[in-house]
Image (cartoon, rainbow, N blue to C red; front, side, top):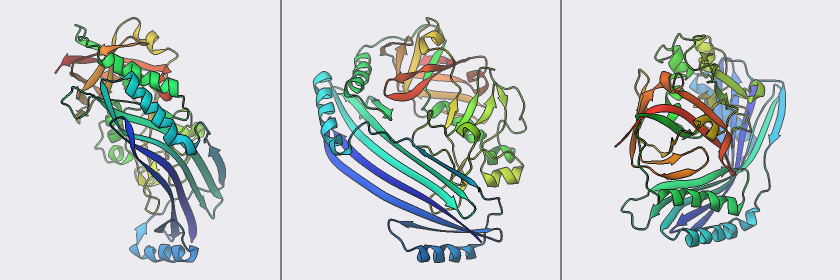
Amino acid sequence: MHREKYTINTRQISLNVVQTEIDSIRRKNISKTGLRIFREGLVGCAGAIGKYREEDLLKRAISSLQGNIPYDFKLSKDISRSVDLRQKFIDEKYVAEEFAIFLENIRKEQPDFIFANKINLTEEEHRIHNDLGLDLQFADRVLEVGLLFKEKTSVNVMDGFVGFWGREYDRNLGLEEINKICTAFQNKVDLPKQKKLPVIFRTGDRVPFIKFLKDLDGNSYGSNSSLFSGKIDSKMFSEDFTLYQNRKATDTLLTPFFDVEGSINPDDRYALVKEGVLIGPFTDKRAASKYQLPLTGSAAGEYDGIPTIGSPQLTIKESEKTAKELLEGEPGILVMMASGGDFTPQGNFGSPVQLAFLFDGENIIGKLPELKISSNIYDMYGKDYIGVSKDTIGPLNNEKYLMMRMDVSKM
């Protein structure tokens, strides 16, 4: 019998923003502990929130073995590593005070808009360790300013979204980002006349990754229900396109370098597509064993549950060019809000775009009318793929620009 413990400690200060003012403050400090027992090819789990008695947790975990849940996979072992990314860029004691000033400045500088939603300062610690020598620890601290906005004269519930998310904070830089979006929002511009245009997503936007998250799932791939099934080692996309399952600290936020089974990768990432060639799907230990696929370390699940395959953080290898250099003087369509879009089983993509701006690679020029964008997965990352910029979308955000040519038209 072997024991494995997974713990998550979360501390958060959450400011609820209404009418561009702090309406309420919520503080959270939660510890979650999950204990897994492995015996004779079975697994049992138990969990606790806050303080607990070790003997009670063990007793419940052993008792749950009666559920006969199979788990006959090699446990991660003999690895010890700790990563702590927490930085003191803002003192918790002054978060409410600082963002009261921040919002006051927004009210003065953007009197035509109303802002609402959340500002969160989140600190997380994750640890997985077992009696086979595994001990992995991770900690991170991130500020998320996510504000919905609407013009005071607008009949909409909201008109757009502004914000930043990262491990740094500077009031003036944050205000500059918000002012840039709001100024462009009030400058209405028309869509360029050509049908196919450079379309630009933030790399943190999941919309352009939907098909990969679904069809590169190891279970989908292995059961032959994926568009990509049976195509490992096939050249499918542009040679400039490399897609990673990524847990690397410089590329992700609040993402441990290990999955919930304690699996890790060299350089904390795994190439699913390399220079246009399909390497394979993402897997947990169960999918890798069932379909004889490489293990990529994509197990997820509740702290007190059975590990299962999850949706990993996907990132694309960046180019050596800035956004402006990638556009080569051509205007692009910067997508800010696109909901309701999807891929067909054949890989065709279409989506309405509720908010987009005309963008020259450096400056957000103005607000475009509502749009429709469409393409195909093979074109988006093949002949029409432009690249990912080396520069970020803002000084307080680690997201970059993802560009591809797509068919664009007004709604």
